[in-house]
Length: 183
Image 1: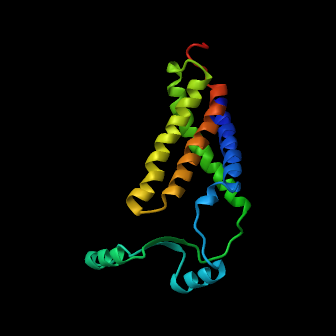
Image 2 (image 1 turned 180 degrees about the horizontal axis):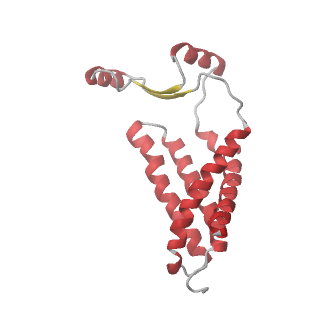
């Protein structure tokens, strides 16, 4: 029972550390576009969007013919808008992130422990964890540019992150899950 909570807690810590290193590096942000002036852009968004929320333009609430006409004419956008200010490095974000990783690690641990009989060694645990991350990331990350016309480069960054974060967890689980050959 102790390992059922301790190992996912350690895996979640590894995920948090890797995630912090990944997202605090300049690499993911090299694929983002920039505006001429963020202050002017933010003021314009604040004037247009009435409240915090996600906006799809042209919106699905429109008559389908009008929406299609506007979509063809361009521009189109998906905007994640937060009207209220907040601290970029709010410590609660890290706590929520750790709890998120912990829940994911608990579920991953169940899958990996149930597969332990087929493992030949440490690398099998890491490979399966990585494959699980790749599978989920392929579905979620690549859905964005395919179905919503979001940036392919940002989707590929998220695909990389999603795969590597599961590799980080697998490196921890691999130290604790015994293979059939090791028993």
